[in-house]
Length: 209
Ligand SMILES: Cc1ncc(COP(=O)(O)OP(=O)(O)O)c(N)n1
Ligand SMILES: Cc1nc(C(=O)O)sc1CCOP(=O)(O)O
Ligand SMILES: [Mg+2]
Image (cartoon, rainbow, N blue to C red; front, top):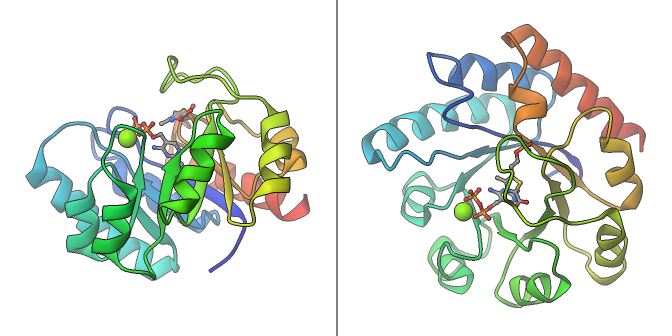
């Protein structure tokens, strides 16, 4: 598995009206290495259906699929899982999904939360939000200095999230982020071609830093 790259995250509102699959495929064609399925609808049938389709697309592009919030769905599909602080026990998720599963944890702006996540078996730690986020404006703020401190303390992959664009990404990469997790700065594009171009630009930037 690659240790750096673009981490694309879906959003049900942004990718409504038939955009989910074509926009995701465009992001993978542009080089996204990880994809998180993030759906807050609570519609279990739809979630299973969409996540299953994404699993097939990800397989074709050798991209790691990660399910947000939903251990049962991740377990059913045999893919990765992302858990926030209110989303259940990381330790239990690790026990259920096994030692090989990719499991990520939200750590906001806290090295202490990251310590706890590592001890509970996380595969990666995610910090944010670094910039104003249209998708999640209320998320607690973090600074690039935190990334530098995390880089010195942890060896597992460090993810940066929140308001990331091609313009502001270099400072996060310079501070030590391994993966850039992006929703609006990627899927906010007007069409699939533009999504692919953005993904390709992000990927080139990450490889260059
Ligand atoms: C890579 C990544 N980092 C952070 C989050 C946020 O998780 P959480 O705090 O549980 O918030 P929701 O995404 O569930 O609204 C994430 N999803 N992915
Ligand atoms: C889902 C999420 N979690 C955040 C955190 O800081 O934990 S910020 C965020 C939204 C990311 O979307 P965008 O790239 O559009 O800002
Ligand atoms: Mg969550």
